[in-house]
Length: 144
Image (cartoon, rainbow, N blue to C red):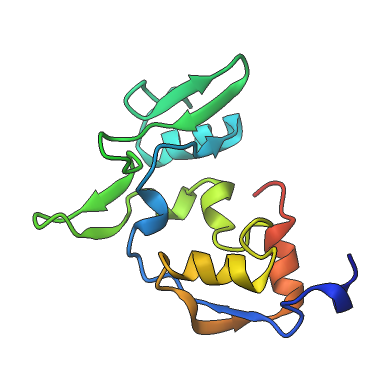
């Protein structure tokens, strides 16, 4: 699909509000590579370049995902005493999957899918306008 055929050629606005909605909800996977596991491990002050079962689960033979708390929160989503999300406790070293939100291919497939994402993500359609090239760079990113 060419640039002219993409509905978001004029760009899309997004600004993370640290609401935590993308880090909670229905069970799922936050895929992490071994390099990302090492970065998170270093960030947590571990010397072994790995994460405990509290933070990491193996999926199949060769894949890893961050764990979730009961209720669907990512293990690294911080909440205050009232239960309100306060952000990601590993934000500086968050995995690529998290870094590229909300500009995932499925989210920008159509205006309707983007609108649906906006129904749960208050940062969609607000804040900084990301131009087409920036969106494509993020959407197609394969590594840090």
